[in-house]
Length: 226
Image (cartoon, rainbow, N blue to C red; front, top):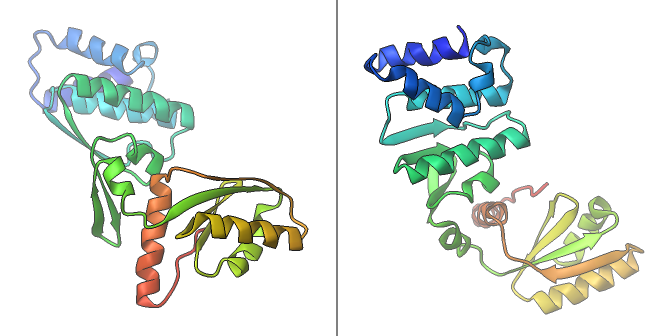
């Protein structure tokens, strides 16, 4: 089926009246940036376009509540941003949206969220409220060889949670000044160039990894932070 035929098929399933349907489909096509592709076979669409088509089909009957299960999984970054722009537009139309996602940067876009591990929620609230589950101060280190440095820092900071985040190292500590001083000394002794060190606001990924580490330590084993 083409893009247009898919939307029309779902309109039939949901019992959308024929009268006014064409105008509604045209609005959805424009809304999801699919108008230029309305005659294209759905199987020939990119991953991002397929997700937009799925969203358009789900919206054809004007739902008050929308459930989306990992809607941007496997979608390129540009299409992900475009998809979330569409979701924000739906919020202005008073549609309640539930989204499951493995991307914590996406979860941070939500008004309210829950973090889940092994089928259980362990934190619920606004992004700022969930971040209060982080115990300690987070500092970020910029080191030329982060993968080599992380082993050095884990030895130098045994009481801290040290993890690799991209090309930076995050250290969760109860005493930022003490840990920063020890990190500087350890890098100097290992001939590692420390380009910068600063306190930062935690991301949801920091919170997620930290809470899992804490729970794992309580259970007697650690969690990898890459």
